[in-house]
Length: 199
Image 1 (cartoon, rainbow, N blue to C red):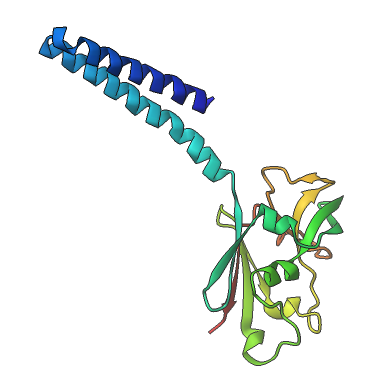
Image 2: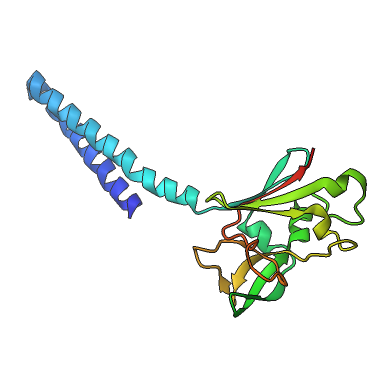
């Protein structure tokens, strides 16, 4: 749609410019200015017509950003997340039985070079993983919760629900934490995971 509109406006601008060049010797200065202004307006409109399409393309590529404890970050797009080992996760929330296609959060962390917790000790026990959504909603997991030798908490990044991609209000991804009595840490539209060392 936008591309077709862009093409038509470009054709109109070219036609006006060609007509202006052909008739320039016979046109008064005032009429020549009007022709040039019309061609300029058509070209301007053609550039504006393509902008919404570019904005839609940019908005259509969400990423999950993972920030390591040293502040370095890496982003995973949908293709990278789909390439990770997938598992089925059965969980309950608000009295409903839910079935998710998900990836283990530990595999997500490994994919960007953040080693998941395992037999933590010392200062590593004072780290937290903060998961955030674009609307500002944030939750925290103690790094020790995710250590299988300590908390052993299983956290998943859901890509699908009941075999289909997550609905727009929940996805493209959300955290799922089976076994918790309330799904308050099931962050919808999660787009950032940041590991912090507490002072």
